[in-house]
Each structure stands twice: as structure tokens, then as C-alpha cells.
Length: 147
Length: 401
Image (cartoon, rainbow over all chains, first blue to last red; front, side):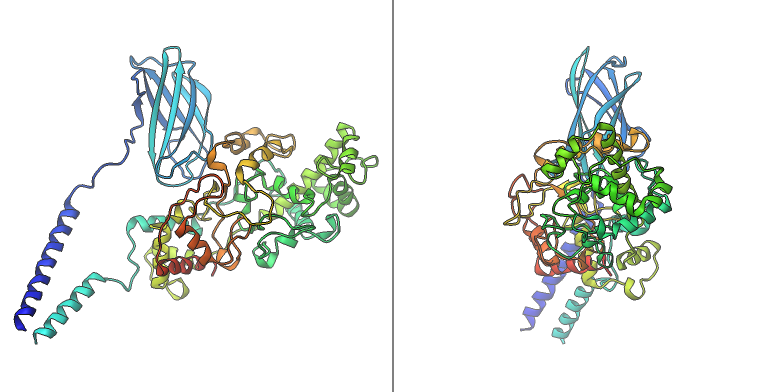
């Protein structure tokens, strides 16, 4: 009888040790950085344009209609003028599109376009996809925004 | 002896596992989310630049009179307050509203209504004042017509109206009953009116909406047990009295902002993202087909009282919601507005046509996540346990106490 309890005790001790090791490893490992690329400057997929995307007033606010600035340069760094831009996007993890239909509303010079009507209605991973067409050609760039 | 030491060890292990169970165990991320839901983060109400009378006390006073005035309806009995009952959170406890006739939608409560970008369950109006006009001419609600309203205002409230909005137009040649949306006779009478006269009547009609909206802007959400809990949590104060949450309420709150994903759409201090979603809520047998947001888009675009129309005050910069609205696509089929959850526990039934009688049924629906009758539901099965569903309901009640 006594030996059974000894085994149980030993088993409990081993389980506790194992749990401790697992917890220590888990807590000290760097969090796997598998989130989306949230850089605000990117090349179009074909490398034709370099696009930068920033909120016009600096901060991203959830639930408010906002305007952002999309700045387009050629790979050589020249501003892209007269571009036709269409905007789409959504939340990949929720399988739904954008709650608004943002549009390029103004050209502000120096390759800068105002993209108005952006609204992030919830926290999480959003994607904004810009299809750009200009004299130099066409390209697509996708920005990830995580709130 | 050994037996007792083993029992002691087990007890110790159990205690360690439950460490601090007496206090809410909330992570920093959870605390941040909870703070974002508290009423004290609600910003002050911004002026509605499309309604220059929105914050004029005399307009709100006239609006209040009109809100409770059954005399304005076709049969003289239906006021805004018939369905938006002042002692019932400005709703009527019915699955579908009943005015002059039986409608196909649940009456929405009004707390915080002036903060909405879109009105009605499907967002078929884009301002509070344009919303207020719609039931007035709906044959199932107040069943009136705008020519009759203009005459009524002149007869009953002419002096009050003119003190706010300036001189009433000459209505001597305006028919007693006329409207572009009314009966065939009313439509014919409307079409026979000169454009200038139509404009005059539309202007008085729009001002009725602006007065009612001025009154409704004062209806705001009230602090609840949840808000007191959230303030104590944020300040580190020990929750006292009813601000202390039970373990079940804490579990419900954690599920709400975590595994159950409620906060995805029910976010911010009003617990709504002000957007439209298909969540697979079933249609009601016997009601007309209802496709939600997808059919409302054309209605709000065609509304002469929308933000881009000529009855708007201020400039067009106020019209960005309308300008940038989503007009098509599968995501707006049978999509309905995310309702605020403040006060929801004490105003069954639920959903856009009162489909669910209790919060238990609502939570069970979201846990099961059935396919949508049309379009695609955005919610996915959660398989919540009985205990978890009960905890969510317990938490929702803290938004009503």
C-alpha cells in the first residue's frame, strides 16, 4: 500500500517539475512574430512604385471617418502624378470587407494623394489594397494596419 | 499519515492553481478593453452641422411637444412616443412596432441616438432629423402627409415655429393632403403643386424633423453598474457595493471581450461599431421580405432630406458617411445595425424584428451561429458551455442596472 502512495507522490512531483519547465520555456521564448507586415512604406508587387501610407492627422482612431495620405514615388524616387487609384480591403480574419468605400479625393502635389472615407470599426488586422494606374504603368500594394 | 500529506499537497496545488481567485484576474490588455467600454470615455456630443437648430433650446422644446403629440398623425392617436415610450428606454417592448398599422421592425431605443451615423436598423436615413420625418409619412406608423403636417404646424404651433425657423410660407393654396409618398390622391395633389410650393412644404417638413432631432439629442445613456466597476478597475479602487462584480459577471465580461468575440462589433462606450453586419438572424414568418442594409442604400441615396440634399444646413463636409458608404457587395445583404447593448437586458425581445424573446436565446444564437437565410453570416460557432452562456447574460445585465 505504502509503495503505491510513494509512486503517486513521485509522479506528482515529476508532473509539477515538467509543468514548471514548460512554463519557464513558454515565458522566456520570444513571442512568435508571425503578425502581418505593418510597414507604412512598401513597393508595389511589381516593384514599379514605392507607396507610403500615413494617417493625415497622425493618429489612427477607431470608429471615426479619417483621411490618410498615400504618397507614390517611382522606384527612382520621382513623384507619381496623375495616378488613378482604387481602394479596397477588409479584415482577412473576419472575412469581411471595409465598412466604408474610401476614395482618392484630392491630389496634393509631390506624389501625395488624399484617401478619404477610411473607417476602422473594430480592433484587429485590417488590410487596405490600392490598385494604382499611372503613366509609368500599373501596380498593386497592400498595407496591413493592426489596431 | 502519508494519506494526509498527499491530500495536503493536492490542496496546496489546487490553491496555487486558483491563486487570487477572489479578485478579478484581468490582464492589462483586458483592462484596456474594459476601460474603452466605460461610459466616461464617451466624448461630448458634437454639434450636427446639418441641423443649425440642433442645440437651440426653443427647437428642442417644440420638438419635445411634437414627439409626444398624437394629433400629428393621420388618425390623431400615434405620436413618436407611442413606440418610443419615455418610461421604457424610448422603445415599446414589442417584437415589431405598431403604429397606425403593424410594422416589420423592432422599435429601437433612443439613448445616445444622436451619435449614430445611420438610422433605423438598416441605416436608410443619414441624420437624426431625416430619420424623424420617415415615420411621419409611413402608412404603418403615423400615416400622415407633409402638406397636412405643414397646415397642422401653422394651426397649432405657428407662433412657436416662427420664433425658431422664421416666417411660415403662405399655405393658402397648398392642398390639405399632398405628398410624393402618399396615396394616389395625395401624390396627384403633390404633383399638381408648383415646385416653389413643394419646396415651401418640404422646408416646413424638414424643420419638423430638425425640432424633433433637437429634442432627441438630449436623450443620452446613463451610468450603469458596469461603468462603476470599470472606473474602480481603472483607478485601482476596491469595488464597493454594486460596483463589485460576482465571479460569474467577471467570467461573462472576460468572455465578452475575449473568446466570445462580442466586443468585435459591440465596442466603444456605446457597445456598437455603428456598422452593419449579417449575423444569421433568421427572418420572421409572415413578414414581408427583408434584406436589411442592401435595400437601404438606394433609399438613403434617393431621400431628398439626406445630407447631400438642399434641406441640409452647413456645408457638404458633413456628408462623408453618405459619400463614402458601401453601396453593394455580399457583406450588406441581410446586414443590420449593431445595436447598443446598454440597457438591453431590460428590453426584450431582441434583434431587428424581435426574433429572440430572451438574452439566453440571443447568446445561444451567437454560440451556435447558424447559416444566414441569405448572404453570409459573419459569426462563427463558439460552442459555449451552459455556464459560459449564463455568465455572458449575467454580464449583459450589468449594463442595465
